[in-house]
Image 1 (cartoon, helix red, strand yellow):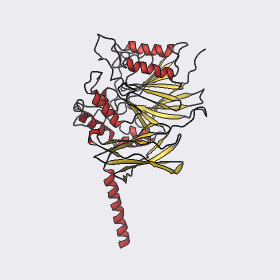
Image 2 (cartoon, rainbow, N blue to C red):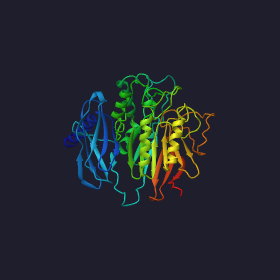
Image 3 (cartoon, helix red, strand yellow):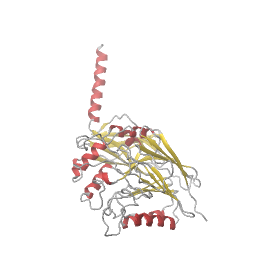
Image 4 (cartoon, rainbow, N blue to C red):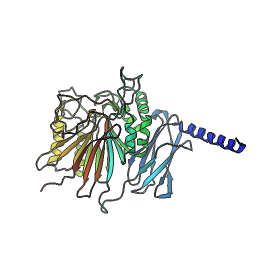
Length: 446
C-alpha cells in the first residue's frame, strides 16, 4: 500500500470513528412532532447532558436554511430536547440535520418534515394520509412477567415508515409501564427511554409527524384512573417524550390537545385523568370529566372541518359492555349524552379513533335523518393480540372488519371539498393489506 493511500485510509477510519463517537451520544430520535404553517416541533434524546440544535432546509430552495435554538439536555427530563423550527413557509417540505455538541449526526434514514399548506378559500383541500395504532410493548425480560415475551413483530414500525403518509397518530398504550415504573418519575423515564430507543422505530419517528394520546399503561398501572397518585409525574413524562401542540387546554389539565390537518380537525382526549374508578357505584360515572366533555362539545360545535376525528384510548361505539369501553362500568350515560349531542346538534362526519382492545374493528352508528358516527379501533402494534371473546357481541361492528392480530391502519383523505372521502385500510405487521373500507362525507339532510 502506498503512503498516500495509507494516509487516506487512516483519515477515512478516523472520520468514521469520530462520527460513530458523536452518534453514540444519541439515545433515540430525532422525532418530528406537530406541524403548523409557520412552526414545527422536533425532538431528540441524548445519552447524557449535551447541546442539541437542528439545521433545516427547504427542499424547494436550498438557500432557505435556518437553525433552531440550542437546547441543553438534562438528567431530570431524561436528556430530552424539544426544538422549534419557526422560520418556515406554509406548504413546504424540509430536510433537517441534528447536531449534538456542534457535531452533525449521520443517520441511516430520512429526516424530513412538512408544513401545512395555505389552501382555504383558494383550492379544494389537499389530499393527505395518516397512520394510527396503539399498544407498543417492547420486551425487557428482566422486568417482564415470566414466560414468553408479550411483545413482538417490531418490524411493523419499519413497514409503517415506508408507507407514504403525513403523520402517525399514537392511540395510547404507547409504552407499557411495569411494576418498577409506576410510582416514580425515575421509573417512568426509564420505561419511556427503553421503548423510544427501539431501533425499528427510529425511521418512523424521524420522517413523519407524530401526535399522541395515552391510555392506562402509559399513564400508570392497568385500568388506572383519576385516583392514580402519581399522575402529575406521569403527565410531566408524557410531555418530555412527545411533541404535541398542547398538554391540556387553557386551565384544564391532562394529556388533552387539538390539531388541524388541512380540512380535518383532531380532538385528542384524555380518558384517564378525570376517570371515575370502574368499580364505584355511588356516583355519576365519567371517563372524560365534565370540563373536558364541555370543551369537546363546544369545539365540535365550532368546527367547520369536513371530518372531525375524536381521538380517545377506549372504544366508544362498541355495544358489548366489556372491559374498559364506554358502554361498560356505568359510563354508558356519558356515551349516550355525547351521541345525543352530536346527533341533536347535527354535527356531521364525526369519527372516533380508538385503541386499547388488542384487536381492530370498525363500528358504525346510523339513525335515519341523523349524522352517522364511526369508531375505527386499531390495536395492537407490538403487544399481544387478544383472543376472540365469544361473549362479545358488538351490534355496530361492520362485518368483516374485525382482526385480532398485530396491525396498524392508514387513512387516506381525498376528493373535492364537496365530495370528500376516507379510504381506510388495516395492514398486518409485515405491511400486507388486511381490510379496506370507504367513508364518504355525509351531507346534512334537508
